[in-house]
Amino acid sequence: MKSEGNTTPKMIAVIEDDVHIGDIIEESLHREGYRTCRAYSGTEAQYLLADQKGGQKPDLILLDLMLPGVTGETLLQQIQDIRDIRDIPVIVISAKVGIDDKVDALLGGAADYITKPFAVRELLARITVQLRKRDLSARAGQTAGPDSCQKDRRLTVGDLMLDLVLREVSSQKAQDKNTAVRLTRTESAILRLLMQNAGQVFSKAAILDCISEDTPDCTDSSLKQHISNLRKKLAGIGEADCIEAVWGIGFRLKSLPNLY
Image (cartoon, rainbow, N blue to C red; front, side, top):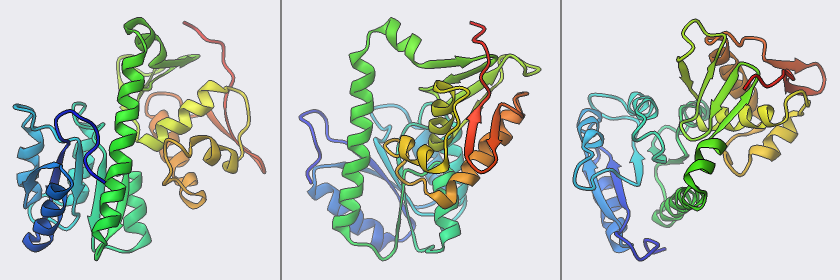
């Protein structure tokens, strides 16, 4: 599982306060050909991720949750709020094994979650998968021309507009029409599906099947919470009723004429 490609080796940020565990991770990554940068606390990680000079922007982040200073949960939220780094995949590595901890992290924007103690081979495999996904997305964006990128990056249904690249949704109904609300990866995938098929009812199973490639960690038990969170965010921009629950079947986006 060597670092893929013939370009500069990928940079992985290791945010871990346990020196021994951090050393094991870093040594394993170096053997696989990756570069690393390191932080031992949440506060130190903030400075690390703010450094965009000299190629220090990581390609992937390994994040412990129980950090001194700023917690890993807070740091994960901050990463999602910063436009320049929100696309960096975050793999949480934590001793917290509870289902609620895992669900909260995945809903909060983590790409993957692995519990301690962990097998190094499994961690390296998960890193490879996330980096491969990111590279495929980058190549897909480069393949399309500039005009195509600008056109294809946005979906519009009625007053609602979704930016697929930034994962931001806005509406002409909002008091400030320039206000955009950030979505998680899963929320964006759900809204994209419903907007592309406005008026069509999707069962929970159909939604999971359609978004599985983009959000493999979304499950039947967590989907309802994702949709609830999405509806709350839409309500904040004046679109409280755009996603309808069809009793006994599933969900749909109201079919509205495209105004643009």
